[in-house]
Image (cartoon, rainbow, N blue to C red; front, side, top):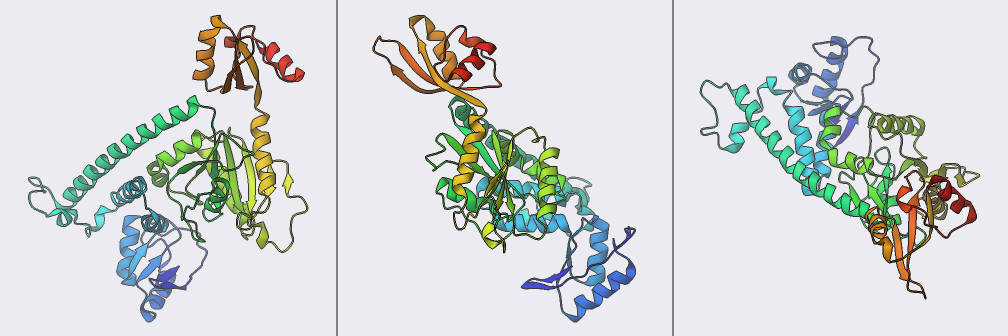
Length: 396
């Protein structure tokens, strides 16, 4: 595929049984592209595949134009989208990691960007200097990101001490995650019909009265064949996903490639070790369909339009039911001898509300996960439905 900086000028698609170690494509195909590049004065050629450093260099020499492979293009887009301090550091780390494998080309003279005096060690070649400078910068960025990561861990610990649950929005890039996030939290984050409009993980409180105590997290969009180096660079975003209690897989139902992209997201979630987290499939942009779905909500699926705010009540109910199925809520009475139990309940983030009855006993409104041990409750009764009381008594 070849492009001009001011816009796409054309595409070149072809099948190839074997990859050429020299040019990636055959000489015949390369020559055809070269003619198009020269005749149309194109200065940027993009390959929807990863190229080796030597292949990229050989193609640039042949085309007399800049060549970007798939990873290089993604990094360029990331660089133009990053706005926060952490986002910019993550992108720079990914760029430098990518660049460190391509220094055989000889055009990246980093010491000129830093003054160039006294930077080269005794007997050090230009290539060795460049590699050393990149290595130093990578280590520096990793240290700064690690500090940020530790601070986020503190924030997560504080959140986990409370009763708030985290719902993370995931999906293929440009599926409408940020638009839905803005509706669910009454926020005004930037959203646009473009890939990777969101690079930073953002967490906000739910604005839905039907979902009190919930937090929603907007995350970077996925893409097929996501390079490993990019995944590693965006560790903080992935950690946010691993802490989630529920995932909303936002899908652009109007996309012609909807099935392929949905499978790619499912594959990435599996590869990232997130398969054990419950997922609700949210089919967004249903307003763009010619035929509307017969049922707005079905099983673990729901059809919505974040733009027109359609189907949101059904989504809210589905999220609420997801957490209701995992927890038991009720009231428990505590006397003066139960101070340690009270501390335990608060420490485990199970207390929703505290009060005192007419006899002076402390009354705690608690929420307990069904999959957690109840030993610490001893013989205490939780006043709730008979079915749930029986469930608790069986576990204690």
